[in-house]
Length: 358
Ligand code: 1HN
Image (cartoon, rainbow, N blue to C red):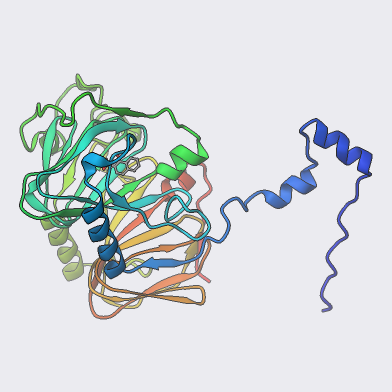
């Protein structure tokens, strides 16, 4: 079939063009071309740990947290996409943060949801969330739900590093919700709860009240219940993954996979805007594609992820991203474990989520 000639652009008279322009009006057939292009050049991309490590070490040498200008006051190297220089994707932000021995990342709170996934941690590296000190051990995942005060205190001897994952591009850019940040009057918020408090409230026996004094909805509010502050210890998560690998069949696209559930509901997503999985891969997965963004952190092992015509070769601690609608599959070299992050809950909330095999 002969290639179709591009259609001639509709021409308006110069007078009409000027009239619209003077009145801040544009014809839809012009506007239409710009929709969906604000976030240009979103390609599959990978950030290798050795490059991230060199960068976080260098900024740690140059920039004490105490010298940071007013603002978020966190020492973070932020993987950015070619088409969007604020974050890895248009919805999910991932950063790599360090806190040196003796340093504190001062207390603040905000409307964006956040979590920490510990890379180099210790019992003495604590993130303080909603009055409780959570020790950050390697590969622990700790939530910082929206509006909860949080500060990070390193009482250990080694620099600590972790991933921050926030729905920041969604909150700050798409929703333009900029007045959603507040600094605490103290660098360190008072510790008002004993260790283990938050976890204890979401076990099999729970407080009877619908809503606790601090306003965080209790377990009886169905799927809308807010995410509590919570630490998912890697020790437990890994044990569950192993049990799955020993007893179950893998999912064709995601291997042996666990959802980090909202402890208040027992269901995913962990946050209304972002969902997380631990995925153990032993074999090549089947290709599929979907309109939600997937980002990954390599917890263990090495392999490759094929995205369209690209091959992302990954090893431990690398970060990579798969743009919407790209056909992709994983090919681990032996056994590998990934942390999967996605904005799928946003699509599902609006009945937009779609997934298919090629
Ligand atoms: C934030 O609160 C943290 O608490 C890290 O560690 C990165 C980036 C933007 C906005 C808030 C943190 C952040 C952030």
